[in-house]
Image (cartoon, rainbow, N blue to C red):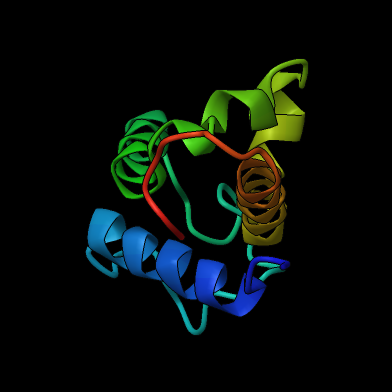
Length: 105
């Protein structure tokens, strides 16, 4: 069973609003929204997001895996959709691996 990407997007959007306190959020956050250019996220905001992802999804989702191997400019251009797809793929893998402990999606 494939993870509901709309639900993951809603979770990520909720986290972003909590982190940014709606500052820098002009309009709707979509899959195409870029973290740096559109949301003006700083390093501390990204760290806060990683913490919230850990709290929500546990060890099933590793935010660092999304950015490892990318240069700084590539990381700055990450879109919300990139993160949603990363989360969904990680959760799909976790569901396919019986015996793995963690928080359900």
